[in-house]
Length: 400
Image (cartoon, rainbow, N blue to C red; front, side, top):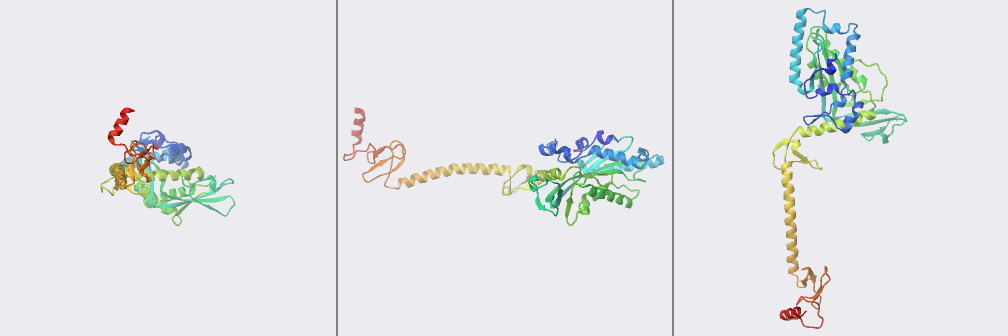
């Protein structure tokens, strides 16, 4: 059983097996960033409980009163053991081909195979989760998420949140040598965001599926039911209610459920859904409505209006805007110049070349340098005197 925690693994999520147990203990990872491998955010790590799953599977063997002797299949004939081992190997090969990175195969321990499968929930239409809180100090100010409603009790509150992505459900299996000919796999179901009774119902449903398929490979049917039908099995009118927090309940020992308060779990769920939605956007193929090329979302820019354009087109558009601005400024300057030139009472300051309004005495004052000049000779204002000729102006400058 130690292989569940320390054995070598395959698949992108191999580090999950050694992650800390529970969403609460990984809150720092959820808030401060997630482990990344090959540039991909490992959003599942806060929801893993590998050590707890291992201990539960060990307890499953001892609870039967025979420990691992039953798992070892000592009562089977040798040919039955060989047949079961071949069928287990074939089943694992098929599961790896189907589930890829969502399957973690652990190192065999004493000839027993063990593995985990991550079941992810993408709900395009969303699902409403109602979180019921019951605490003396609970108030709408304590939580900044979802729609708030005051329930019947003075200290009872509920918050309704909509999720497009739910945290993963993890199926951990240990295959006894008597599987599949006689016994089902020993398993645990981990859902660190669900209440215990919900996870217990899922475990009981897996028992029912095995009872209908005795002697057959059952893991694929389990996973497909958990992925496609488990949510609708637990929903009531398309909603799921969590809480109020229950300290103790008679749950299935194979059910690993929420142990932290909803005040800490719900924000982690919202963060998970938001990050998964962004990750899906980056990996999905989109069409640029300018060039009509299709490429991944990582090559797109999403504007505040939610319209999408590829980076190349946005770069070209920005360059055009900058160029158009420069040309517009030149056009505006020339237009102003032409307008001023067409006005008979506008003259230009000989110092600043700034347009000035000419008065009735043919004088003007520059609004920039305040120079008062004659609009005819462009020299200083000379009331009652004739303008100097250009030759006289030159001689006056030389004499000065």
